[in-house]
Structure formats: structure tokens, C-alpha cells
Image 1 (spheres, rainbow, N blue to C red):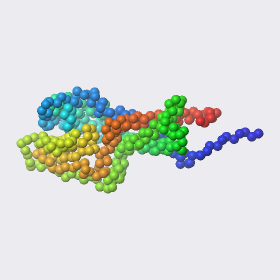
Image 2 (cartoon, rainbow, N blue to C red; image 1 turned 180 degrees about the vertical axis):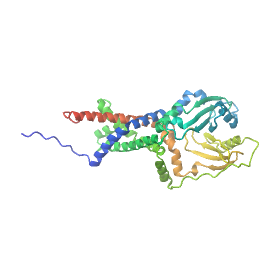
Image 3 (cartoon, rainbow, N blue to C red; image 1 turned 135 degrees about the vertical axis):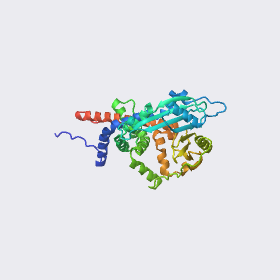
Image 4 (cartoon, one colour; image 1 turned 135 degrees about the horizontal axis):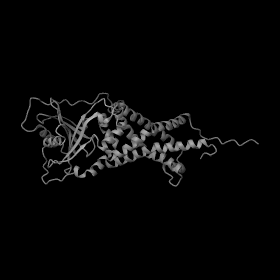
Length: 400
């Protein structure tokens, strides 16, 4: 009597599907540590604003006097520079429509552009918070070494200033995009019978560890796929210039870069008042509905003062720009958000989309959980592979 022949598997996978599965496995293993790193640092950074303001609540928020009269901006700027030793120049100022917010004075100066590490590429990067009503300094922070600044640069390039840092991040992100798509192909149920539906959309919590781990990898991976794709694609905009240019061209329908605003300060004009204060007053009058106004002082010559009127308490994409004469404070030119082409607007949204802030707190919560699940995928995927590897070493074990 001849031995019983083993049952042949039905519905053999196609060559393309087998190749996709093979690539999913080995590319996942190759990029797993980087994907885990990006997910964890993304989680940590997601609520950096809320955490920072909670820890330093007394420094970020002030008592509002009845008259709400603020100290001239030029005086506050000088106070900030004095608090930093008098040798550092304020490069950007944020004033808020929210009355109880301290105003922010930032300084930044690049270091060695050829430095390998992040810390050597910056000479200084500071934040000074000032009560706008009293002129009192509430906080001086060395943002070069601030916790969330370091987390951001870890996420950005492993703290590496050399292009190799972003190359590692960028190519690992491209692999992650492929893993998301190939994972969807592997996950896709053959039919929508209830048994298949439950396997694809629900985690069987009462099952053994191997099954729970398998479900976490597949089911949670499916639920966050779209969000993870958005996080990955917006990350690629920073990682590769060619990708950013492609996004711009596709969105704008043109290869022409955004037009520069032609404006220069007049060296021959002077006024008795302090021009920077006049410029700020003009910005306040123009941006009456802005949630905050960002001021960038000019540095001599014919350079202009930039004033940005942001619509949103912490987002950066929706703003109008004023160019003002540094010697008179006079308005020279304006560019509104509505004047930007679709490519400019989309690239401008990139940061807010990446961190979820474009949808407010719900968006940041979604970004947090998507990053957390993304960080778990290399771990759960490795456990699945390791279990199958051990299973193959013992052929006596029947397949499930």
C-alpha cells in the first residue's frame, strides 16, 4: 500500500506575490531599527508644546493688567539680548493675540557647516520669554541642548549634520512606504466572509501570544496605514530635495519656483520714532485677526523687516507676509496666503501635516498613536518571522 500523499495547497501564490512577501520580510528586517527609532522619537515629539507649556506654565503664561498696555517691542528685544549676555542678536520674535501669553524672542547662529554632528553645526540657539506688560524675563532657555530640540534632531538625522544622516532616514522611510503597501497586499482578505472579516479587522485577545502578536501587526497596521503614509511622505519632503521638487511641480503644475517679493529698504530715509516699533505697529494694524505675529529684524543695508501674520495658535502653514522698511517701518510689499500657488501652499503645510497639528489636538493624537504603532511593527514583524523560522526547523509540526 503506497503512503498517503500530502495534500497540495490550493491557490498557490503568484511569483509577484511571493517576491512581494520576500521583500516585505527582508526589507523590514533591514530597516526595522530605523523605523522603530522614527516611531519612538515621533511619539515623544508629538506633544512637545503641551508638555513644555505644562512644565513651564509660570514662564509661558503671565498676568494681564487691566489696560493691557505692552512695552515697546524694541525695548523687549533689547531686554532679551541683554539677558543673553549682550552678544547675541534676536533673529525672530513671536507676539500673541492671546493676552496671557509671554512673548518669545529667539536667537540663532549657525556653526561649522561642515561639522559632522548637530551640536557643532550650531553656534547658538536660544529662547527668551518675556512678560510683554512688565518687560520682565520669565525664562532663558538654551534650545541647542533643550530636550525636544535634541529629540527633533534625532528624528531628523540621528543628530548627524552630514547628509548621510538624512540619507539613512530618507531611504529607510522609502522602504517603510513599500512595507505599508506590501503589508496591505498581504493583509487583504480573499473574501469578506465573517470569519475573514474578523481575522482582518479584529484582534483575538483571548488567543495565544503568537496569534495576538500576529493580529497586532496586521490589524493595527491596517488601521494606521493612511496616517503612517502621510507621516512618511511628508518626512520624505525634507529628506530628499528631488522629492520636495517633485511634490512642488505636481501640486503647482509648474517647474517655476515661487516669485520673490521685490522690496528694499531706503537708506536715505529716517524717522524720529524707532522704525522697528513702527513696523510692528503697522503689522498689528494689518494683522488684526492673526493669532500671532512673527517679526524678523533686518540686518543693515537694504534688507527689510519681515512680519508674518499666522492664523492658528501653533500651526505655520497659513500666514500672510509683510515686508517693511527697516529705516521707517513703512510697508513696502505684502504676500498673502491666497497668493501662493498650490505647490507653495502644500510645501508650507508639510510640517503641520507631519506632526498632526494641522488638525489640532485630534490630529496630534492620531499622529502619536500612528507613530507608536509604526514603532511596534518591526518588533511584531520580527516575532512573526522568528516564530516561522523556529517552526521550519521542526517539520513534524503541522501548519496551522
